[in-house]
Structure formats: C-alpha cells, structure tokens
Image 1 (cartoon, rainbow, N blue to C red):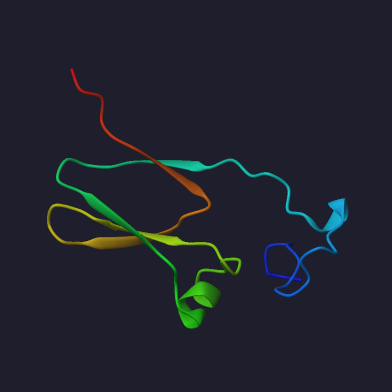
Image 2 (image 1 turned 90 degrees about the vertical axis):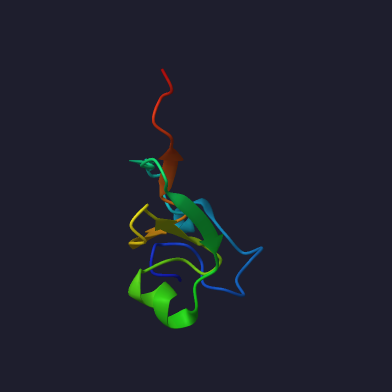
Length: 84
C-alpha cells in the first residue's frame, strides 16, 4: 500500500473501498502577480520526500523574484487574484 493509503503500484484492479484514500480538501493557493507554474512528475527521491503517491504530479510555482515553491499537485487548487 502507498504512503497515503492507496494501493501500491501493481495492485490495480484489486482495490476495495477500504483501501481508497478518503477525499481530502484541497488547499487554495493564490498566485501572485508575475508568478508562473509548471506541472511535472517528481523523481523517486522527491516523491518520497514529499510523501506523494506514485503518479501524483508536483507543481513548481515560481514567483516574480524567481523563488520556487514545490506543491503536491493532487492537494492544491491554484487561483489568480480577482481582476477589478
């Protein structure tokens, strides 16, 4: 079984309701002006360090100063500031 309660790789087709992770709420992250986002698949070391399930992407959020934050792509919702 994966770290977050999902079946381990290779056990597809043998899932039962008790093995599926409960739906979690997504964290909302508002992108600042000048930010950019890249979605990518993490390497094994990064995936384990972030405790991501196999197949979950990470989001690289780069702000206007060039600082990068790595976020779990299956746990966040990105929003833009409202335009007024």
